[in-house]
Length: 344
Image 1 (cartoon, rainbow, N blue to C red):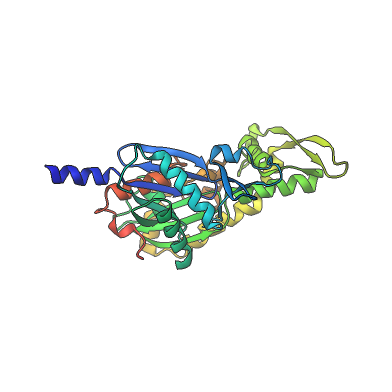
Image 2: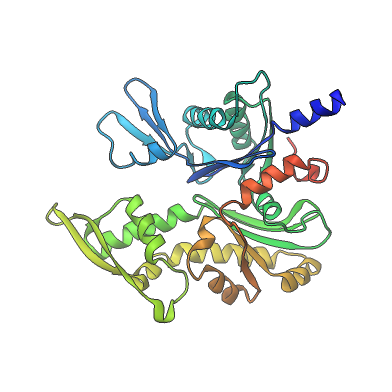
């Protein structure tokens, strides 16, 4: 009995981490999702001191005085600043641990499917230095499929499109592995940047990415809204006068602005379908494509994807949480999902 209790307590220390370009989510065994924070760190560059991490740091983006910088340590799903990434993970892991312990947790951490061995090692090292006892890697589309409840262990094809902040991942999955897939460095960040560029070009108005993200959430869409087209007031700095200014921007204009970025994601899905074995294609025709990730919440994304691929498309429940839920479930049922982890 004591031995079994010991094993259970060790499993209870397992942690799943969705280390995203925009946000980091953490799932703790037996407790569910215990952290949901922006992947941002505010640093005093003169002293090299971390001032804030997560939500508090994100509030500082574009608003910091000289000497204080708000850093996103991941770019396009890849660690761009190893030292800052370690500091961020250390803070997050400390927050979710219920009490000080001599035992460090096993951490399953998600990665884009196209990372190089060097990039994978950077993720593993950052997580170990942040306080993990052992690090297991799992590819994001596979984690998303597990979190969405798709039958990834069976010899049937399941297709998932996960649209994150820095990357979009498309994969056809069977037998705990990716049979065909594409990973592109296009996601919510590129959509936001496209809105910034459009407002600058069309209205001579300078806005920040935080404002662009707000516009995307308020009136952004991937598909015509029929009778629900709308507009919003956008405030920024006039490039001609240098003074604060505001303009009205319509949902149709924003849809035009993000067309190229959305088109890249659609093309990745089409290429994946073209490279899928015929037997699995039949499964996908029957079962459709599952949309996950924050980008899947863009209005009309499912309708546009269905039109362009001629496949059934559905937005899964909890699209923002699927990746971290999948990482947590893979750790909790390690025997069933043993083949899903990246071989190192």
